[in-house]
Image 1 (cartoon, rainbow, N blue to C red):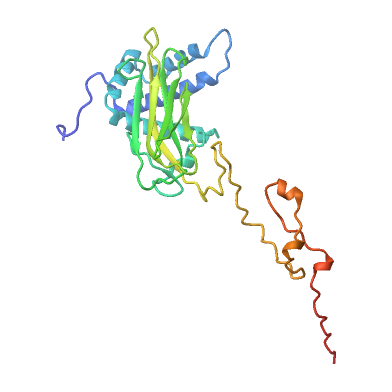
Image 2: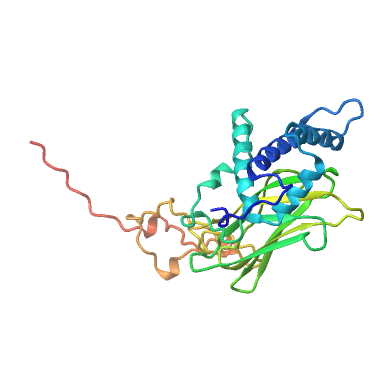
Length: 316
């Protein structure tokens, strides 16, 4: 049994203990950001003190924590398991205190089918560090026949920051869609701290997505910085549009725009009193012609056809 399960090297913190440390570590980060700044203290100074307190609580030194994080960052399967449990505990703690988690719960239960679906098919976790080999991460998904014209796309994920140097440089992320007509649309966003982040691209009604690509980018500072962004729980949310038709959707192009069809307004009832006027008696409404439409004006009393009088019924 021992040979079938890979052992953690000596000096590396176990998964269970690492989960507890990271839970307190991120709680300390939230406390530092929310705490009032008094006596010259800054967010960075409070963050460092709270993080040291979290490590001291578990009898772990900075060197032990740093070496353990380096090990787990090289084993994304283990790190993903840890952060799944850490995220669940943080969300539960936030819910216990009545704090909103940014609306993430409304997308958690989505499947790969339906008008709004989570179609994520790439890796479950990304590590972004400020060094030339790890400061850029990307993914790509090919769209299949389940994608429809006009589908909007949103990339959403949870992000946790491990930092000893403050929250100065943001994590940049973008979403790029290439369509079957070779058009391209993209959107970019950024985050500086542990939070739920998202970026969305809206699609014209007659464009069908072909490939979708996302990037995570962290700038490299001039001096070495101990910063790690852990991106986990990614979701690619697809939104099907309903009633997608040129006559129902206003075009974004510079050409003429089609007016929406009013399916509620009933059609005008035919006039059972007036007869069809002769061609020489047709009158044209000048104002209507200027608006690009010609309307027949109801003929005067002289052109009406009188009906035969109706005999009243005999009452018994």
